[in-house]
Image (cartoon, rainbow, N blue to C red; front, top):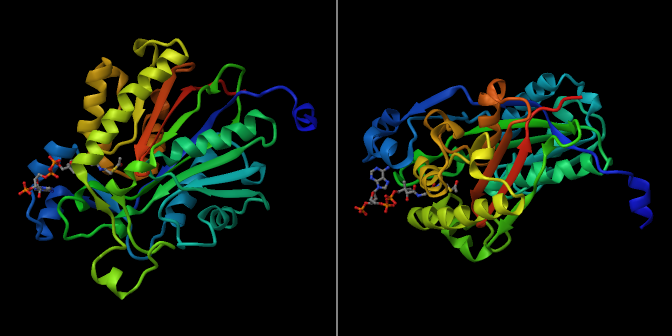
Length: 339
Ligand code: ACO
């Protein structure tokens, strides 16, 4: 109770700056065919919507991409790095398996003060979990400016001879700065879920405390992503349709009142299935999976960066994440409201 009285009234927390970074190397579907895989541009495009992805080279890590995205978001927000009170990095591919965290490395790279730094691990839903966490600190007045960066380099954890998995993923980073905005703007809702019974359908088996990496795990490629593609597809759509409907009902909103639906860019067919089920119109949807592939938790902020100049002031933007865990989440953001 003492804490409550110290905190004061709740503050509206919103996105005041956005940035992204992609690695230099573009890899087209044809490039994957040319690597010798038994696939085609047509197969990959039709089944996934992906035409191209960017791949980090051996000298580029997640924190390298995060640093550039972060600096762009800070510049876009018009604040100084020393104005930051916290950094949250969503990643499942940090520079180091255990420690130091990506957020601590990023704090030093960008020259932030000695501030709160936390990694969030929620796979492709990580951006939803990270902005939900960061916005609570702003909302309660505990922090003024929180940097949220979602970054993944999944290309380093795919088997480049496995045609069912390697064409899906690309690397990238997206970043936002959360800060106080006008009352009623910003991150309006936080609806996050998980169901660990589906953990096996998308996993990396070895390298953790259950099965530390050893020669056997290495030989069997158990340090790489294993995915049951059909099960992921079915689980994603079966969780998303009722979850989005429930969120709309809970906040007494209709599909038409959402300006833009921003889905995690996993697969165009998952997105289109949900779009059709919910009656989302073409002009309410923005996708860029054809350009970048599935960049895991970075995909939502990368969409925000691509689209930032065309969001209208006060537009309701729904951010929909889903992925390994199984975890999924929905946030509604009222865009703009800059003080
Ligand atoms: N090129 C050609 N053939 C392929 C390829 C490929 N790149 N990949 C798989 N196939 C083959 C399979 O080997 C199989 O051949 P077979 O019948 O001879 O055994 C056939 O295509 C059918 O395989 P399925 O896996 O059943 O193919 P499906 O139609 O389900 O498409 C896909 C596979 C695209 C992965 C699909 O299951 C899917 O989109 N799942 C969702 C997965 C996803 O989005 N993952 C992203 C990560 S998770 C996340 O971010 C939420």
